[in-house]
Length: 235
Image (tube, rainbow, N blue to C red; front, side, top):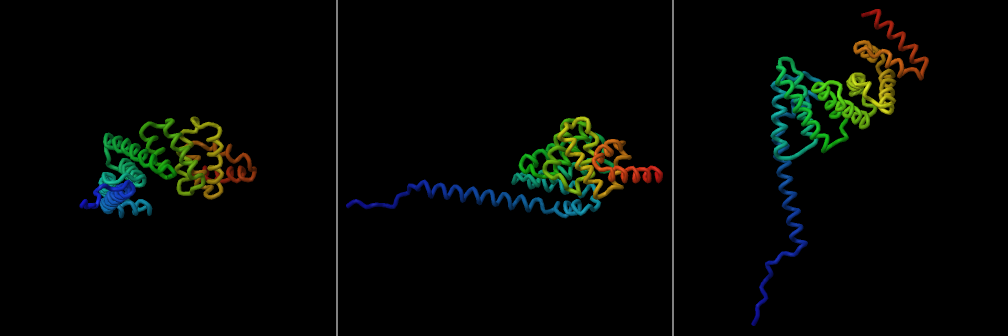
């Protein structure tokens, strides 16, 4: 009499379920190890975010921890944190010229990698623009990064003045649409911190550019000239 033994052949549905489950476990473990690897650098990152002073050894720790984490799991945030740490270390006092150039170039690679994974990050785009300006001066790469920084967050007070300074440095390379967007940024800066805007315009020689931005309002332009005279007389 024939005996029907249980089939060892796996159904397609069960095979797919097992494959998906295995992949989820593997990636879950990898992300967990990645997060654990990055823990030593987290207090340093929090200090940076709180605008506290961070020494070179702290930045080295943050860089090492993010590199370890990225070996296990690709993360846009980890890449941009790495780029930030590399950029800050490059601009730390005591870093020699060759190391500085190397760190700036590494920061550009890291920030580009992070933005490829998570492009809606105006802070990372602004840092990339700054890094590109350190590496190549007022280049098309700076313009491109600034354009994305403005598109992803037009009215972000924390980025306003550093972006404006970078925009002023490459002003001649922007097209008419970009310039209109930057004029809006200048008017926004005038509304929230007029004295700081005047100080920036004087420091980098862009007084006429700010005047042009404020031409649409006689009242604003008049007040700008008043603050400008006060700043010039006090310096």
